[in-house]
Image 1 (cartoon, protein in one colour):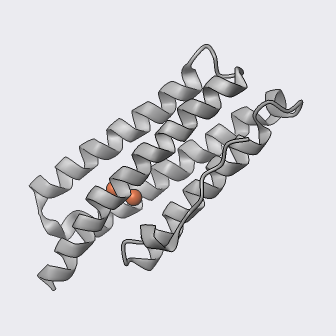
Image 2: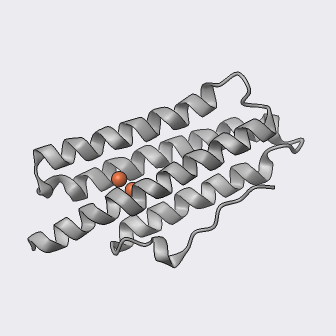
Length: 133
Ligand SMILES: [Fe+2]
Ligand SMILES: [Fe+2]
């Protein structure tokens, strides 16, 4: 079974954001656990819905935090969020959603892309914010 592990070194230094990132990893792990089991057909839809909603909520709340960095930086970051959101939605909408191996791999790749976003962009935004104050 695939899983993802949250590590303290992924923290960007904002407690609220770090907690939300960690929670996204936890929902992903709940999906990994269910994939390929008999319950999959019953609960996969709810779990994806939860992951999608929580991702949206996280992006929205994070964008509010980055807002003071100015319109251009804010919009560029928001565009990256929209892309990640679209990629997650594409996994759910794919014909092979009930193919456990394929869905697990797609979700794993998505979490990896999310982590790269966290380390490369969220961390940079937080640094910029701290520099400003
Ligand atoms: Fe984030
Ligand atoms: Fe972000």
